[in-house]
Each structure stands twice: as structure tokens, then as C-alpha cells.
Image 1 (cartoon, rainbow, N blue to C red):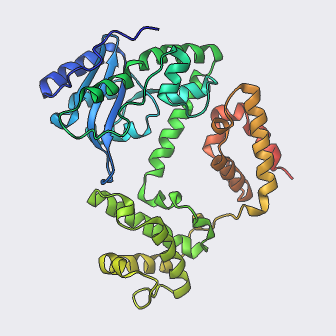
Image 2 (cartoon, rainbow, N blue to C red):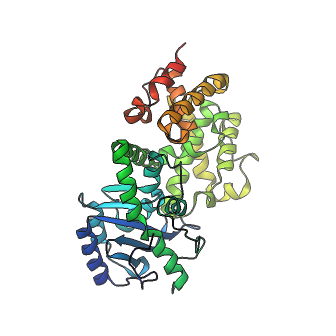
Length: 373
């Protein structure tokens, strides 16, 4: 298949006037492909470096470091008549949020669409281009410094290729999903993932990313929850990676020690000197407040270890359902989702949101059967 007509190393747009003109072109296109390049090694928020957009006329690159007014792009993203096609767009949505304060109204994620089309779970852009379009792309500048100027011809070439095939993929996948009657499934799943991502980004939910928290007592988990929320807000305020403030391991150790010492951390070795010097007073305050308030229902984690066989049956049921509808088991019900459903059942709570909607016609009833005595 020939490459879409475009210049494979276009000169980036570097003025607000040219950017506004490009945005008017994209608004009129109706469907655009979009990708971003950014750096996030030493900051909490991604630092936008390049915006790549394709339409029927070809691809345009935008040097985001040279643009001061992102308002025209915000208008394009908010337009309900514009479909924004992206691949594995989670981080790109964060970049757009930083740039414009908003995200696309209508998104078509080609990675998610490919999963529902039965092409595999979490398929990469290059693999998908090879599978559907029979075009092999090299990895190019995957670890490039996108904030260094000027950008090299190879960087510009790589960045262009990252959006050049999004619209052909969109057309192919849209047709397949319509034939399979799964277009609504994709939209529903993407909306669910977007809501879950927004909920998970709240400082109050930061502790959910900590591995090993299940070993803590309810009081220890309450302390961890308070410490994680403080770290998240501090990282946001200072625009620093979480790990540059306190590591996950340090937070777990503090939460565990707090419950064993009754919060007396200033006078012993449970708080390392560098942590005590920089954050000692606020950490102690968080711990004391958490211990004073006590654990909530969310801090009483369910021990799933006695239910290993039940989880195994749920996984087998998921694999069988996935085979029947030619979907990846990871899409149908990933491990954490199965644990969430089991936990909700054990706590006599409602079926989690991810098992309602399209999954309720494919796998949820069978999984609930696994949970009945």
C-alpha cells in the first residue's frame, strides 16, 4: 500500500498565526489523526514538545514550544463534529490537557478499536500498521530528546509517520467494527476508561497505585492513603515526579511504622534523616491526622488469598467467553477487574461499573455464576 500523500519531514509550524490557520483546516476536516511528543523525566506534568496532526491533505507538525495561544486547538478538540483519531492515547490526552486545559470531545483510539476487532490486546502502532496496511515502519526516534532544538530531519520523519497512517487505520477499523456490531462497545469502553482515569488521578486515589498496600492493617492503609494524597498534591504543586519526593517503598514503611509506634516517628529511626529534614513535620501531621480519624470502609481491604480457586474459575470462564467472541481475555476481564468483582461480591456491593454495559451481555452473567455458592 503506498504512503499517503504528504511531505515526510515537514517544517514544523512555529507561529500562532500559522497554527490558527492549521486549526481551521482541521476543524473543517471532520476527522483528524493526532499524536504528541513530550518529555516527562523530571516533571510531574508532561512537557509538550511537538504536536502531529494528519488529515486528508497530509500531515502537519506543530512546535508547541513556539506557540503561545493554544485556544484554536481547544476549539477543535471541543467540536463534536470532529473525530480525533489517536493510538493508545492515555498520555496524549494528558499532554493536550496541559496545552489546552481540555481534551477531545470525540476520540477514536485505534489500539482499543483493534482489540475489539479481534486483532490482539494492546497492539502497538507499528504492529497495527503492518497488520492492516502491510507497511513496515522502523522504530526511529523512540528515545529522542524532543525538547532540543532544532529537531533533526530523522525526528521530523519519525513524528510524521506516527500520524500518517492513523486515518487509513480508522477507516479500516471502523468498517470492521460496524460489521461486527461492536462500534458502541468501543465507545462505551473508552468512556469508561476515561472516567476511571479521571477518578484514578485524584490525589485521594493515589494510594491505589501502591503495590504491597494489601499487607497493611486498616489503620496502616488509612495512613498510607493520607500520605499518598499529600505526596500527590506536593508533586503537582512543585511539578516534580512523585519518586523525587518520597518513594512508594518509603511511604509503605512509614505507614507500617506509624501503626506500630502510634505515630511517634520524630524520635526514632523509622523516619530516615533526609525525609525527616525535608518533610518531617508534614509527614508526622499526616500520620497523626490519619490515626486520629481512623480507617474508613475503603481501608478495610479484603484478603483474596483464601479465594484463589474462585479467581482461577473466573479466569477460566473469562478465557472461554473470550474465545467465543474472538476477543483477548485481557480486554474482556483483566486480573484487577476480576479481583474487583470478587471483592464487591464478598462485601455485598453492587456489580462494578466495568462489568455493566457491553460486558453484561458477554461475560458478566457467567462470572457471577462462578461466585454463587
